Amino acid sequence: MKNIFKYILSLSLLYYVITTYGNDMQKTLAVINYHYVLLVFFISFIQYVLSAYRWMYISSKNGTEMNFLYCLKFYYISTFINNILPGGVVGDIYRAYCARESSNNLINLSKSVQGIVFERLSGQIMMFFIFLLSLTFFFLINAKYVAFLYTVLPVLSVTFIIYFVVKKMYFNEISSNEIIINFKKIFSGIIFWNHTIISFFVVLSYIVIYIISAEAIGLSIDYFTFFVFTPIVLFSMTLPVSIGGWGVREGTALLIAFLLGLSASSSISVAVMYGILNLFCSLPGLYFLLSLRR
Image (cartoon, helix red, strand yellow):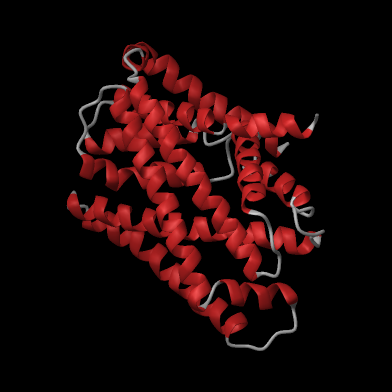
């Protein structure tokens, strides 16, 4: 039932933006510069390499040794599956199941799942941090201080409360629970900072690709403005209410266009272009998936 809802939501939002702004979007997307598409594919490859290395690094610190090329292949596969199926986690479930058999040894399923959950969590924490930072800049630059007080400040307060509660409950107490022990190890000290730095560059690559998506369709953009609002659009894609972020991403881009006084059709066109490029760059995952079936 939840999956049906996600399909309906994605299709409904896409139907609205396409029927409302379709003609202008068609004109904008018709002038794609394919040199930028190649640049995006290159940056995306670096992004996959960093993400695969983050997964391998976190898994190794969690007691699971895996081959890097193995991690890279299954990262492509899981991302492709997540882009075409609802929930955004089906690919990760498949990755956890298949990753039990690395090139070195048979991995315990619990360890495999933990490694992927911790790896995804590292990226989500960084995305959330940059989202809050960009939202703060957005409100302060546009002198929307009341909005800042009623949105960002409460979220920051709740975030810090949750952090200190979790720290007191799990980090400051001795526990015999394997998951808690591993969580404490991965999200503290030098290990935490190592994968957090990787996550920063991964999220940064998302933002750069979004900006290049605007350049690819010939839009004249204010880079600072794009750096501020792009994380907001990208964060909306992490909400588990659509298929690969479709519909929600475009709806968020439309909302921001209204708030900033930007062209609605151009803003939506960038979001659509990003979605197309994101799917295109995950296509090696389809090749790797089909190669497993041979």
